[in-house]
Image (tube, rainbow, N blue to C red; front, side, top):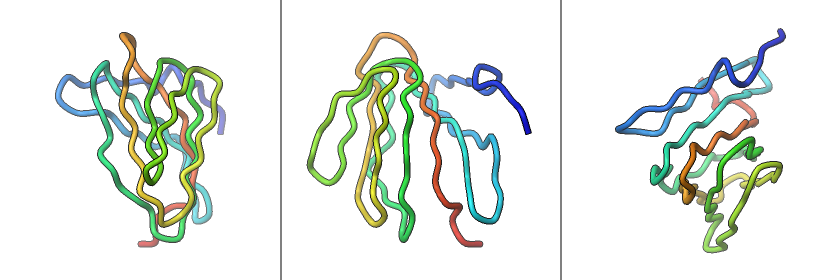
Length: 105
């Protein structure tokens, strides 16, 4: 599979966008797109680490109670079973490549 991240960028006025670029039994690769001011509420993934690569924009990540401000090129890891959230704190879209093991079916 070969694809370009820009072909998957989608912004919605009402809610942040989550898309899947690739999924197999062992790996999920996706894209999360947040317009300015949008946020993913705190959530966790049981038994699965999650990695965010900030491609563009600026975000505030909260992992457990630790806040981090992130910019393009930064990688954020939310360990398994850990509450995490992200908010677009910038004036442009926050675009992130994500990777994790897929949730069991």
